[in-house]
Image (cartoon, rainbow, N blue to C red; front, side):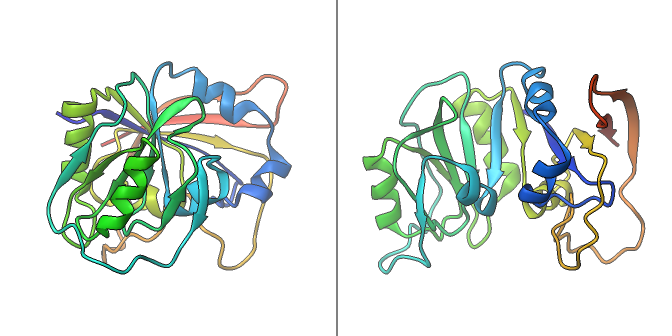
Amino acid sequence: MRPYIICHMVASIDGRIDCPMVAQISGEEYYTTLESFGSSSKLSGRVTAALECTAVKEEISGYAGARLGKESVHKAVESGEYTVIVDTHGRLQMASGEADGHPLLVVMSENVPEPHLEMLRKNNVSWIATGKERIDLHRATDILSEQFDVKRLIIVGGGNINGGFLEAGLIDEVSLLLASGIDGRKGQTALFDGCTWKSEAPYHLKLQSVERIAGTETVWIRYRCK
């Protein structure tokens, strides 16, 4: 039984989510609405974590040495909330085992190098390694629920990790803050990106609520995924 999964993002009206751009058209409303969900683990992809997670020391191209080659779960800390980072190949180096006031938990594939796991262990970082070359997101979310007791998981970007969870059918709700600005630049990551399906049919949602955030030009739109 996996957690209830919400994708919570702020975007320009053309659906772009570049952080420096978004910071110019929105304020604290992203964080105040995020807090309104209550106790929840937060998940971000490697690129977003490298930019914003204070626990990340650096990013490397990869380790030499033996690969794990099997599923592995390590719980360094018991917690009601985790800061979860998806780092498929084990490229992020950690300076500590905590970020945003919560213990770190890294989700990787089984192709992760064993020296990387030792680095995580030394920094008191929990991990889930599942899936041969790519992360098995279904299995990973089951483990989050069953072994880490995560009831609600909020995906906080970026676009490719959002797209990966969407394509896997693992998003229950989309919580979108639509800020009053237009990006318009070529090549910028969209709210959901990188899906490999070939059909031109869009992914359908069911509108739940629309609210203007008081004192701002931002609209909060919530959808349920069908």
